[in-house]
Image 1 (cartoon, rainbow, N blue to C red):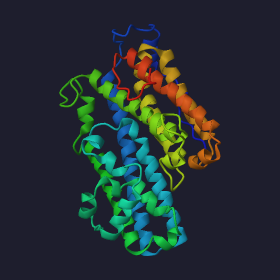
Image 2 (image 1 turned 180 degrees about the vertical axis):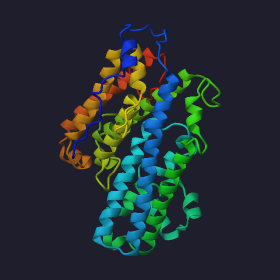
Image 3 (image 1 turned 30 degrees about the vertical axis):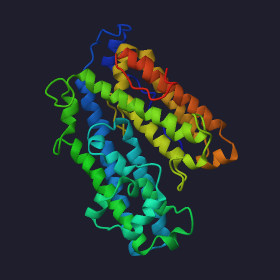
Image 4 (image 1 turned 135 degrees about the vertical axis):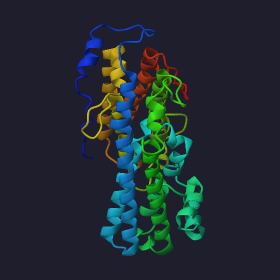
Length: 366
């Protein structure tokens, strides 16, 4: 797997270095830091660009499946599969700022219901309508990116033979649904649309959602924490058997395409973008800059811990399910321990520094 640079080594802005030079502040002392500017930067540099990328990839996925269904061949199948992978990665990068519309309108469940329910997908292939209204009305278990994975990477039989006729039409309809819901997130955040940007950036100054800037920062930290906890408990630790259940290769998040490691990495890329404020070659201001105003060493430590998880995961040869079946999981277990350390730092040290309460759902988040 090609390794990407995730940009954790950049220097802090001069203004933040000046604040840091004043020394570590007490938890109840607010340093001189423009939180509104940080919120605006996060939306403009990370949130909206990532949702726009997601929408563009979703549109490409719909076009690729339309083209394939019109003339099924190996090249078209390969392009549809590649488009699915790009769309899934773009979606997973947005998880670390998954608050507001994506949850309020239940878009997360529509796009990424896991685990896949093959029986539901097969029933829909036979019975469901393939127009937009019919697909919109389907339950979440029968649509979204995991359902498309099952159709594009069938566990039995040859995809080129199976993905034809009504089955292909259903897959194309699901891709169009992914495209529509992804575009909806851009509209929901955009100033020209429903402007959730304003709801976040005017926290404490007219926002109808966040009564204070502290509340807005708390929502971002809790969202980031919940993503790391889900990675630890369900997406990595669960299949590895590092929780209450035994190791289970069938519990990986991408069982048909073998994309579990790639998906976890995409989520971590999004987490790092929220922390640094940087995305797509554009430098911004992120949560890490705010923490650095209190405690530069803590901010740098958490950034290093996130990067360590990424580095270790790049050393795990995919697919993860095969590594588990072969008992070859030492590298993945090291990544799990690094992830556990990062989650603990965020949930304890960072949260305490910012006077934020996070909600642990397991017993080892001390």
